[in-house]
Length: 122
Image 1 (cartoon, rainbow, N blue to C red):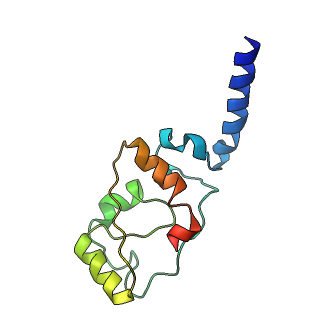
Image 2: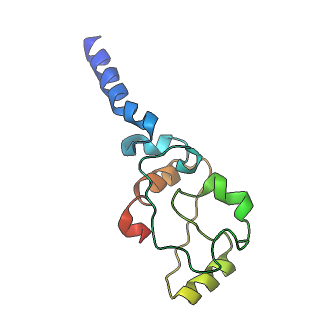
Image 3: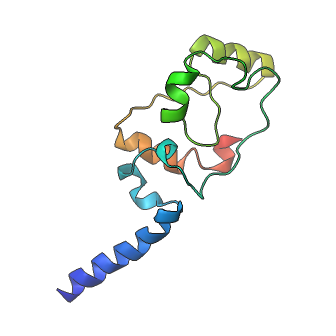
């Protein structure tokens, strides 16, 4: 019983900072998507400022459907392939296509461990 109590207590101590938005990378695959969290200390403003005419003010296709529910925080992606490809050509940047699932454990792990890496975001 003592070993079980110590193990559970250690796990609880590990999870407490997550209440204030600290990243819990070892269990991130089992947590809800990061986009659903209201407060997240692990998010920083990735990338450069958007180019003129590419922000939410200019209506991006499918923006209202997907942005608030499924976009990793700190990113402002395109949700239409043709629109994103045209923007990438205009800016001279590579295209990264992210296929993700709503209830995908591996997708949650990728959001928490890959998208938060500043080298990937850049």
